[in-house]
View: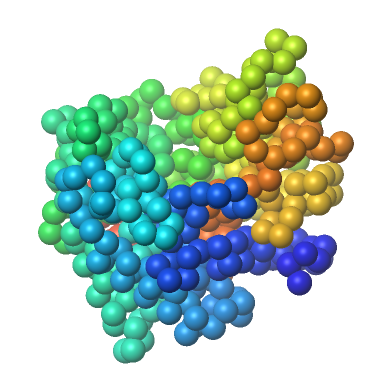
Length: 440
């Protein structure tokens, strides 16, 4: 069924296929989601958070039963609650309530020397908190209990640096990563959850420190003015779970609009960059656009043009901007709630122009690069095609997750609705200074 051509409702077909990626590929015994597939892979804890978010969507869409989703969710939460924690370099899954960025998909133990990740733990916890809200029946109490226990165990204060900001990670071999999370990036959800924690919460000064670099991030003028960040997932991740429509913190009260509007403007800016196409890359247009972290063909220079493998991509000139002609469909498709009037045509154009070259069993492959056509150059993943240039052969959990979540938020508001009821989310937003709208 999943190999059939998309139905008239392409957006629905994309969501169904992308959901199936999470349902089919998570380890059913422990819920751990591979970072990518079909390439052999460790588990990404953030992708697992997106998997937990996808399961209720599957229930509401009729793709799986509530009992199936409950069983898989419980397996996931039981694993993380009992997974070994400690300061040692091996034989553990996490420390101080946080988890390593990558863990073995079977054993759940730390993968090589990866970092204990603050942001990836936050994305995992966000999925757990959504599960806790969705599974609200009397026979689902264990899900709620485990989700809240795992969240409460995170020692956010331990991860906080002297400047009040949260470190990106920690290694038992070398200590904390020097670089902290500061705005404007996907780290916003980390701070909201850290402020809303029941026991080991951060104070308002942490969120103020996060916002302190906002003056460096403003781009555009008038109705186009927005907080900018090159890789577009920064405008998506927090809002996969948290409804930022109509509520504002101090910086956005001063700006006169909310973060949802900010993401709408940023989505239009991504499209405008593709139309301008300063790098003269093949394929960019008003309907073919979208830059974010994704796979790329290879770290190689061909004809004076530099290409990259996996990299954080975004419009050149923005914070963390990097452009080598690689397009990630998730950048556009997962922006559906922000600007459906340009995202729906972009989604249709991607399929109409490139078809099965970039669209497969689990929806859009992670990325493609029409400018990379060399067949005699080794690539990290994927293949070079006649119609789309280089096309990735993998699906990545971090890029698939926002597609499922944001299509559903656009269609029904499901995730936003349940997360508006989360005491942790409400507390985090209020402590960060958000007011108005549904917060009251």
